[in-house]
Image (cartoon, rainbow over all chains, first blue to last red; front, side, top):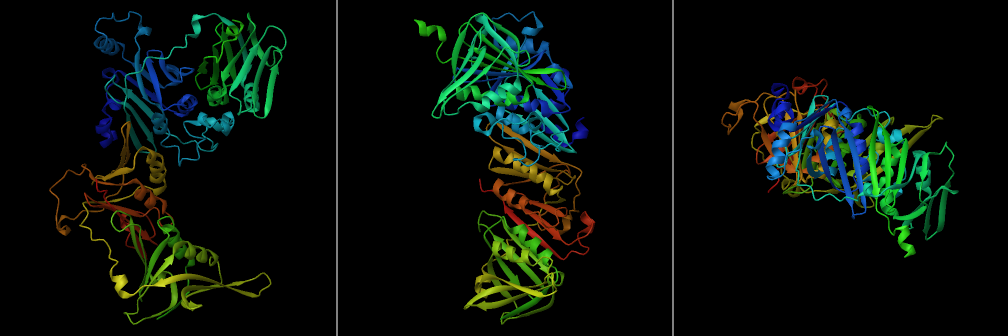
Length: 340
Length: 292
């Protein structure tokens, strides 16, 4: 491999080295699903990344009120290698007194990295910027509207099948760079990104309280609803009830109020469950951060827990079955507290 | 001072002017009995400079030039004005270019003759205001003196270099352009968070003749790189002017000094061997190395 890549090999030793000697390596034959998934959560420049034998989870949070996660299982990659023995060594080095986990799944490497740079690097061979659908921080401009799924998947240019032929990823533990090697038509790009200790994760603790409301809705309905929301409104209210109207989304803004209601019709709402009637309000600008994930998904599972925390789970079709992107929101004012 | 000629290849002239359109607002036109030179200087010290020449007989016929300074004429003109004028000359029956005075001011006048649908002749005149430079002013404009370069290599197709450069430009304001004598060119950009190096391989080197080099470098292995670090802006400006012969571009690196690109106009075929055949002109881009 070294001779094939010539000078490139000198610059990307981890990516071309023997996978057994490196903490984490992976290969992708098509980077578009990875790019699309990462772009849905890139509303802040930095993300934390958890790497283990099951895959990668990228997490982005803002204002302690929104946590977004993209789950990239190993079957999304054409090769995935997480060296558990090396991981155990490194984790032991970091926590001298902790016991190394016996359960392989608990051996996880946590880092923080510049997500926006990672996405820019993955898109190096996409062609001149401006042809791709929006930029990595697409959710910043909620007014850009919802793009069609196919436009998102092909980067806005349906006939453009380029991107990068092959991508190799490599990471050798905290203190080393996150490496990406892309190859397209004989041109090779090696990208090295700085990694950091992750900040203490913001845990909105969704599972600590029972889920009182749940439904699955076809994403196109939710996209329509989001398009109707008044962007001048501070908040958006989501009300779910066991009696009609079952599911209502509303805003109050400079231009008046808007309200969308959905019946329990199976064609629209699936798996409907409601044990406690609640209306909760969330910051609209944060809710709108999930629009790219919504645009890519077929269906969305909405859950609300007893404390009014809201979870959107977007089910995104990819080559390997369905992939998930989650958005978790803290409510503005919890409904129950208004009674006190 | 007299200048008048028939334009036989308005398309080539337009493409040369289009190539320099993104570089600056104005340029210098130096007309001699044998050649037409276009010179663009974006910034004397730190900017990109373009020096070009095209053989007169590749563009014109019945070429007449007369002046007291060795039959040379020096003009400064607006690139955009000349470009627009040349666009209207495309596909014309007959086009004449001449130096004239309109309302007391010097202009380059393009007289374009076309035939309308009914067979009548239409004449359109486009005047491009110019400033005439004195020989002293022209003398002050000198082609940069550059030491012999250490490596000459044919560039990969410019549009793929350009699309990558457009993507990496957000990562830094300078780019390290490197080449070796083993057919490889690399671009490197870095900032605090990320470093990107792109490798182009399988390129053709032009033979390096150590006996021609006044200061031959001590032997470096063919795979070792020579590097020039230049402003990203200047590099992008060069990459955006690709209207002429985007496949026949030679990159020369003079370490710590400059990056020089030679674009050969009118050569048929591709590769180092084709460069001297039927070449009727060239564009030379000088990009100085960034001073810290």
